[in-house]
Length: 380
Ligand SMILES: NC(=O)c1ccc[n+]([C@@H]2O[C@H](COP(=O)([O-])OP(=O)(O)OC[C@H]3O[C@@H](n4cnc5c(N)ncnc54)[C@H](O)[C@@H]3O)[C@@H](O)[C@H]2O)c1
Image (cartoon, rainbow, N blue to C red; front, side, top):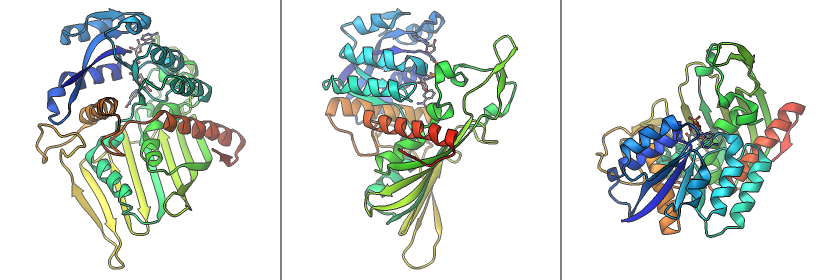
């Protein structure tokens, strides 16, 4: 078993999800590598105890990320910090020669992303990927296989989105994800957008142009002291993209939605493809249910398949049991480590977002901002 020693920078929500996935790595039975967390970093020292208490392997806990990068034992880094820090932190990690799984949006804006992508190009020995766990749910893996098998025929339409509802509450206090200096001008697109782009981009469905409608619905929120302050980030975004089906060279509408104010939705990822020979759809609001329609010239009927624990990377859980968010996170980590150690992904859809795919997402989101501001259709 090859062990990859990790430093974790940013010990908040996502840093701890990685910790948990690493702690139960024995869950996976057919993978020849494992992560070991040896160094952790956050400016909030109160977050150290959870790591040092649960991971005897952690030797270094520091408030200065440069100490993690100077540690010769650290081979790879997971960086889960606010968006305004992505450019400086990711480029420093890469320049230190450490492999990197960085969080989305992989730069607060296109300029920051360009600089990260250029840094990666200058360091070809460093393996770099961006986080997105959505495709690792078993029904999404099955849909990915159907895309590979060209089971849908000519693509008619694709809908992909990520919906939240907690921001419907105007009393929800503001946090960094609702502030432009930390989250960026993209608003909900930067925070949520990579997820619904991952599978369409991996399928080769690249947007050629976009017409975007963005909304800032709740314009003020209480700060930590209860005082109302401006909340200027976009809450919701709908992107109508003109995409090209690479198998037929025919255009089709690709509709990407990211919404923080979608009443009734709780962390709902959805994906739907409609084609001339078949259709498929999945939503995390019913995570085991895969729906497909095969068109053979006869009756057009949707069938529902309840998929159990049938992920890309096998483990101890029986195939009839349920799959959940922490499983998707662990599968994503397995995909990162597999590709790092084997030199290629396990399959096209059991793989993390590439730097090139992040660059495409930044072209799309930047064009979306211009489209909304001018009321125009913009090339991507
Ligand atoms: N893949 C996903 O599903 C998913 C989900 C949520 C967030 N994210 C992404 O993860 C990243 C972090 O988001 P989060 O929800 O974990 O945020 P968070 O606020 O919970 O955690 C961020 C951590 O970074 C720390 N930090 C801030 N400045 C720092 C510095 N200079 N040095 C070291 N640490 C510093 C903060 O103290 C905090 O603990 C973002 O890029 C976000 O978009 C991804």
